[in-house]
Length: 596
Ligand SMILES: *[C@@H]1O[C@H](CO)[C@@H](O)[C@H](O)[C@H]1NC(C)=O
Ligand SMILES: *[C@@H]1O[C@H](CO)[C@@H](O)[C@H](O)[C@H]1NC(C)=O
Ligand SMILES: *[C@@H]1O[C@H](CO)[C@@H](O)[C@H](O)[C@H]1NC(C)=O
Ligand SMILES: *[C@@H]1O[C@H](CO)[C@@H](O)[C@H](O)[C@H]1NC(C)=O
Ligand SMILES: *[C@@H]1O[C@H](CO)[C@@H](O)[C@H](O)[C@H]1NC(C)=O
Ligand SMILES: *[C@@H]1O[C@H](CO)[C@@H](O)[C@H](O)[C@H]1NC(C)=O
Ligand SMILES: *[C@@H]1O[C@H](CO)[C@@H](O)[C@H](O)[C@H]1NC(C)=O
Ligand SMILES: *[C@@H]1O[C@H](CO)[C@@H](O)[C@H](O)[C@H]1NC(C)=O
Ligand SMILES: *[C@@H]1O[C@H](CO)[C@@H](O)[C@H](O)[C@H]1NC(C)=O
Ligand SMILES: *[C@@H]1O[C@H](CO)[C@@H](O)[C@H](O)[C@H]1NC(C)=O
Ligand SMILES: *[C@@H]1O[C@H](CO)[C@@H](O)[C@H](O)[C@H]1NC(C)=O
Ligand SMILES: *[C@@H]1O[C@H](CO)[C@@H](O)[C@H](O)[C@H]1NC(C)=O
Image 1 (cartoon, protein in one colour):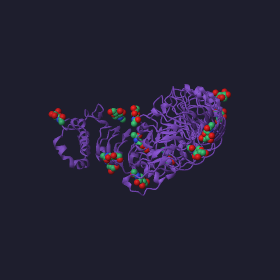
Image 2 (tube, helix red, strand yellow; image 1 turned 30 degrees about the horizontal axis):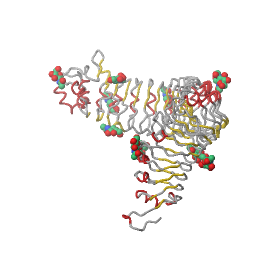
Image 3 (cartoon, protein in one colour; image 1 turned 90 degrees about the vertical axis):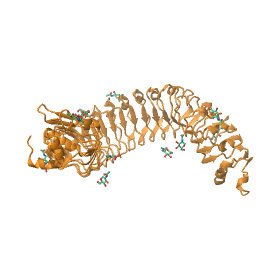
Image 4 (cartoon, protein in one colour; image 1 turned 120 degrees about the horizontal axis):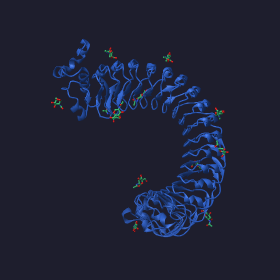
């Protein structure tokens, strides 16, 4: 073994190893000197990395070629901490270094630039700090550079992109700042991941030269300017994520050339203009998201050609016009979110062809007419949100067949007619918000059949009859709002329910006493029983310690306000008035100065 004077000096500190284990090869000695930097090394390494061996080739995490040169060091996920150590640059034949998913800290040793035949470098998932050393450019054979999930700062070195065969560049989730270097357009990148950093400036249009680029991730940075037209050169692009930056301008129409584009997310930027109809030519597109931009115009009918589209998310823009019936051709759609736009006209019945649709969110638009019955026949539908539109008509019997239905939010529309009585019987309903419509008839029984119901919100309608008994026995309900209807009868008995926190049944014609079982709802903070025909005492309410707001005004309660409610009654007397026979008596303990 030939040791240069320089290396002898370097290894001087490790003379212990040299003198004791002189039989061990140079690579082995180097590994042991690396080991001396490391903490919390698992016993699988410390017991296998044996200084008495002549080569390290059988050690855990090590691979050699048939001339005993160390080719690969793979210690992924061993929980090692400490610094990597500069000696790593001495292992001259290394092609693969995988130290991912440990707790290595300190800087990336610049000496790594000496591993001149390195093809694969993965230091992801550690606690590395400092800058990416610019002399990594010496790694002219490098194909994969993965440094994501560290605390690296400084700029992306310009020189990095001059490595001729670099295909996988994964620098996401660090604290990198500065501009994306223009040299990004050089070489043969296939994967370029720069997301979740602090990068600023514009995307260099040279990016269009990366003709083999398949995945480009730039999300969660502070990038500005427009999306370069040169994106249209990237014919192999499958994944393009620029979410959460500060991009302006419009979506480049040339992206329609990207026949392989599968995932495209421009959400949370300041893009304007219209959605280019040419995107309908991206025949592989399965997810397109453009949430919260300033995009206007119509939803292109050419989207009807996207038969692989499974997610279309365009909420919180300025989209106008009608929902194109052609969207019904996108039979892979699972999620269709178009809320908070200015869409108008009727919901096209063609959407009923979307037999895989689970999530339909059309709320906060200017939609009119009825919800087509075809939509209530989509068997996979879990969530239908159409609140804050001007929809009319009735809820059809067909909706009772939808077994997956969890959330129906139709509030602030002009729906009328009865709520189908079989609504709850097939499904696992979680949230029903029918507020502020013109529903008539009775509240259906069995809404809690699936034992998932959390929100039962039917306020401001014209419902009549009594509250079904299973509403009281439903121990999952957390908000029960039936105010401003024409409900009659008694309150049901309540089962143990720690979830119920808010109850408003004001402005009805409910009579009888408050059932003592209401005490079972041990977590109610607010209860409003005002403007009904209740009689009897407030004793049950007095036993609910969690109450912070009570309104029992304008009923026929009798007896005295329980001591536990006296403070509430004093701070808000109007919440107790209108009960001629209710008296605010003073408990002896409080003296005789209580106001009435
Ligand atoms: C290292 O190898 C020597 C010789 O093969 C052996 O005697 C010794 O027990 C080994 N040490 C450990 C820690 O395994
Ligand atoms: C390192 O080893 C793990 C399994 O221990 C393997 O999954 C991974 O692919 C290896 N890394 C390289 C670069 O071969
Ligand atoms: C690594 O970073 C994580 C997250 O900040 C921290 O919880 C952990 O203690 C760090 N480990 C070391 C060895 O520095
Ligand atoms: C190894 O790297 C260091 C720092 O980058 C450099 O100064 C040194 O000349 C290199 N050694 C060899 C043998 O290439
Ligand atoms: C990230 O870098 C910025 C400066 O670019 C600095 O202010 C901030 O403290 C850094 N954050 C972390 C977690 O290192
Ligand atoms: C790499 O990019 C830089 C900056 O755009 C340029 O000056 C240089 O000529 C390019 N090198 C190669 C090999 O393409
Ligand atoms: C889609 O591609 C075809 C063929 O390349 C072209 O004729 C058509 O104009 C494109 N459609 C749109 C909407 O750009
Ligand atoms: C898409 O839908 C429209 C209207 O629903 C229909 O007329 C048309 O034939 C469909 N186009 C394709 C390409 O499937
Ligand atoms: C819906 O409309 C109501 C009444 O016009 C408005 O107060 C509310 O902010 C809108 N949005 C939501 C989410 O309720
Ligand atoms: C139904 O309730 C509304 C408001 O809650 C009330 O104005 C109306 O008179 C009631 N109608 C009947 C028939 O009780
Ligand atoms: C009780 O209500 C509070 C808020 O009102 C909530 O944070 C807490 O989780 C509830 N407890 C249970 C058991 O649901
Ligand atoms: C609480 O509910 C149970 C049924 O779950 C019932 O047996 C019991 O009587 C209720 N408690 C009160 C105080 O009514």
